[in-house]
Image (cartoon, rainbow, N blue to C red; front, side, top):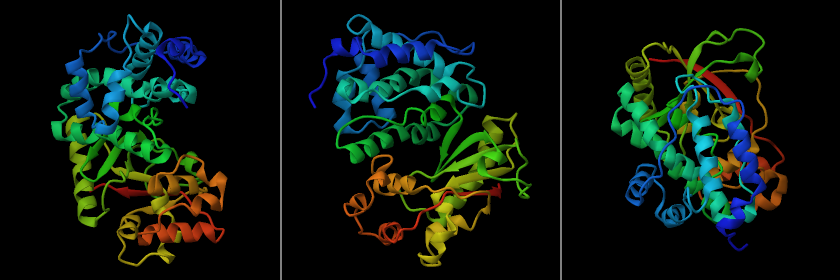
Length: 341
């Protein structure tokens, strides 16, 4: 599909709806509107966000300009305001969850729109992190997740873009940080969300917890995980002293108990799983498995076995996951908690 020119993007219904949506019901607070960055500033920001080399030129070439592309620029400013409104609140602003993907016909101008938003948002996010004293190495590791999501998008679709705009809200609002192998998100335990009808012996409903996320960029070795869990409580006590965290939680296909029957007992995944007290419901999450392990597009299981036939089976994990699906079974999302050391 040929790329759409900027003038067409300026007339986009999506852009108009996005701008209106971002302006509605935005809580008070937040930073002043940012100024257009220079070319040198943009280049520096792409490096900190680990934008892959294959994407960098297109990201910079399509960045909005207040004079040439005023509607896209205004939409960015409104999204920026939404992103940081009530920035001291624990939760992401509700309107951020409504940021829709751009229509495919808008080409790179739409696919990179949210990359442009986060390039624009980076200076304020860094100032807030500096105010809390978050170390530079933690910030580099945390913000590099944007580059990882660009890499995943290209693997899934064969072109450049970003469709994890809502996920990255956490990084820029300072509710998620990467500490070594694992990411920890400041949030609250919501028992009903996970199908719990009674106390599980862990965190109370509504208690502050650190939700654990597992980046897909290396082995899940016990030693690396140990180091991350040991770092989590002192890091948050130092930089978020008003929020006591006694528990970590995890909601992932990696906690599916069916894995124990298909992997060796000393597998890293099973060692990770055994750290947690499992609880709650077990919804189907086949698409999560395919997306995070094989980098398929979302909802790939709608295409059935045709998708499975195209997937690599070069590792034990890949063979285990696909064999289970080909046999007509499903992978399940597991929920777990553990006390922080």
